[in-house]
Image (cartoon, rainbow, N blue to C red; front, side):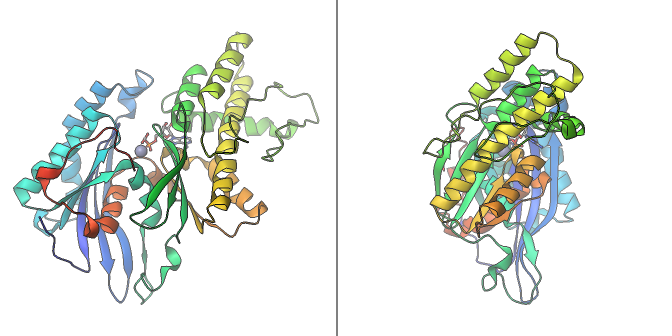
Length: 385
Ligand code: KG4
Ligand code: ZN
């Protein structure tokens, strides 16, 4: 199915790759007054409370919850955007990677709507969608953004996508050209946070729980001076530290851009086992050191890759990109390394799974897509860039 070329158009986007049922309406605007991507609605129904009971996502449970929520979530997205289906120009949906049971719910809902409403449909890669959190925003200058790209990332861009399922460094040369230059060899960074939280008896999802626990440690930080310089991990203390534990920074100096976080998780597990009983302040210290170890590795490798590929922009995406320490340290270290690379830090709610990023990705790629007919759309849990 063909879609007529229009200057401005509206996308209904659907995302169900893991444990968030999400739908959004985004508008791509090109006018003399303003240009760019505007979010008209962005509805996310989180399954966190459900998965907290099991300390992680059970695929079957996630898929069933998507089935219950998908129609109400899509209806709400249309209602909040104050838009009737006939005004939607294109439907976009995540086709992978992700949990197959979860993906199938969103893909089949999207295909059904495309069939009934007779709309073009485009499948979107979840990892790419995370990158497009960096392309949302309206440039209200009286010049179309194509001639005034100040607000948009410049290419080549080095993208760090860090989520519960992925930790990848991706080189983006333009909107069609994505290359993975490094990835995790075992656990993803978000997965490591989730498992570490379980080890420390903290709640799911682990990333925000570890960050909150680590924040408690900063109260005691004046007594325990941390030296987080990337090259030198020896912590110096003026008074006796709470615990003299330093976790490894796996693969931080390896010549490639890959990651490995499972050993770090094991180091935490053994530490907790050896301590037998951990006091509250020790728990906070362990959370802080664990978070710092992950951030140190992510920051150092991202900066090295940005230098190696002469990136003009560094883009963050994925749930872990919501982490405040990661954001701060990336900015500080890019500055101290005197890199000219511009860093883009999307709002935290656009880093975690949502459908606005799916719709935004569609705005930038539908024109080049070969097939926009629902008959050709399939879910692919192992979809690669
Ligand atoms: O992108 P996302 O919402 O879903 C996937 O595609 O996986 O990422 C979820 C992951 C979880 O592992 C969660 O613990 C982590 O992102 N996360 C965080 C933070 N917020 C979410 N990790 C560290 N710090 C955070 N503030
Ligand atoms: Zn995600």
